[in-house]
Length: 78
Image (cartoon, rainbow, N blue to C red; front, side, top):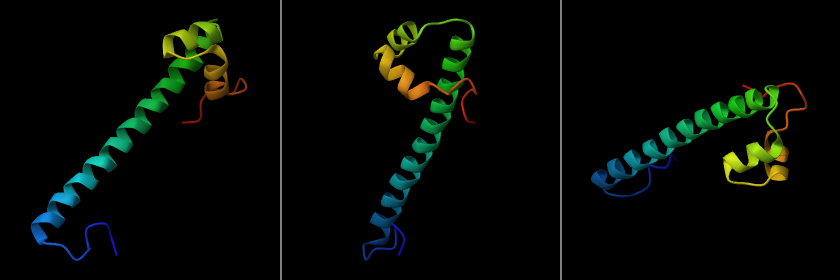
C-alpha cells in the first residue's frame, strides 16, 4: 500500500498525495544544495581556506566542518 492508498476520502487522499509530492521535491532540492555545498567547501579547501574559516562560514566549528566535509583529498562525491 502506498502512502496515498489508505482508506480515506479521495479528496483527502489527493491532498495527502500533494503533501508527499512536496516532501519528495524538497528532499531532492536539499540533496542538490548539499551537493553544491560539498563542491564549494572542496573548492575553498583547494584554495587554502582553513577548516576554521569554513566552519565559521557554515555556522559550526572547524572540527564539525572537517568531519562532515573532509574528503581525504579526493573531492566530494557527486
